[in-house]
Amino acid sequence: MISQRPVFVTEPHLPPLQEFIPYLEKIWASKRLTNGGPFHEQLENELAAYLGVRHLSLFANGTLALVTALQALRIGGEVITTPYTFAATAHSLLWNNIKPVFVDIDPDTCNLDPERIEEAITPATTAILPVHCYGLPCDVDRIQQIADVYGLKVIYDAAHAFGVKKDGASILNHGDLAVLSFHATKVLNTFEGGAIVCPDAKIKQRIDYLKNFGFANEVTVVAPGINGKMNEVCAAMGLLQLKHIDRALEIRTAIHRRYQEAFKDIPTLRMQQVPANLEWNHAYCPLFVHPDHPVGRDELYALLKSHQIHARRYFYPLVSSFPMYRGLASAAAEHLPNAHALAERVICLPIYPTLQTEDQERLIGIILQTAR
Ligand SMILES: *Cc1c(COP(=O)(O)O)cnc(C)c1O
Image (cartoon, rainbow, N blue to C red; front, side, top):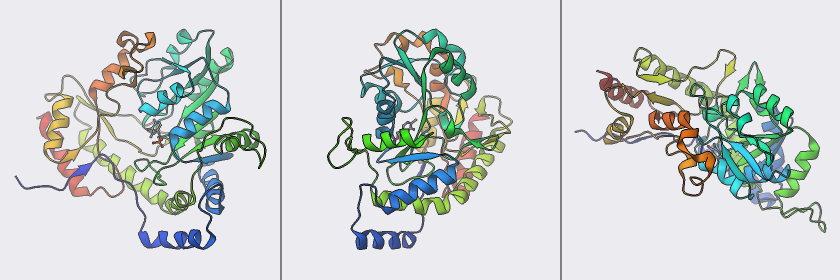
């Protein structure tokens, strides 16, 4: 067999290196490396304007942003969340001594099923931590209604939802706070990075204290804060990425459309429906392999791998199956049938701006052969 170049589920988006050099020269000249330097401030402003949000506080990564968002609102006790996500969502609760309560997902959206939230609420419940999975929005109106009735806070893990708009408005403005990730694998990367989207300047101020050890000024420490600050090199990368993001999103859309076209007539291969009022970021390209498909999901995964195509099973295994969560009553498989079914079916296909059309055609061909 001819050796093929390997294709991964994603590849970090890197603007031309020569465009980055002038930023580095400025950092070298100013010797401002971190602690809220000029690029940090500029990126907070430019991101807020680009995303259509009021305030935003940058972080060294999305996980520290999640941990800090929970601290900022003094969340404790129990928090309702989804098992169908990346480890960091639930881990941020354990890092705050909060008990995660897993609720099943809606099989069409892969997001927390709002109809299952109320039955999970107890006197210890303080908040809901949903995820806009794959960048597709949760039922934000229904979740807010429930939160209002029961007096709960809502923090969205919006790590996948950079730039997503519903009816022309940013999805990031929903909830009390929303958390972004700018990890290398995400739609917009700053090498590593993250942010908390805040509705007002007061909560942003508190978050800014918390990400800097709790320092309110030189001599006053108001909380046992953490070091969550984004440095100037990462902030500069974010500014450069913003110049290229619209083009990157366009290419993602085109790649997704080619997959959709290729698999549309195969009933055992399902892709997600994207509502017409949604500006999605095509952060991921999940394909759901029905049990009636002639080749099983894991067989398909292995087949692609044998052709040097490294698809990923996001999210398998479920977070609720990890050793630190599986003892929880809410982690029992019978409470989470939809999450388990999807975790057994999903395979995320490569999608990133530099994916070559010939590589995409090759992998589409391999998948189509399994449908016979
Ligand atoms: C990537 C991711 C995070 C964590 O972000 P980091 O920046 O890698 O710390 C959190 N939640 C979800 C759903 C993610 O995909």
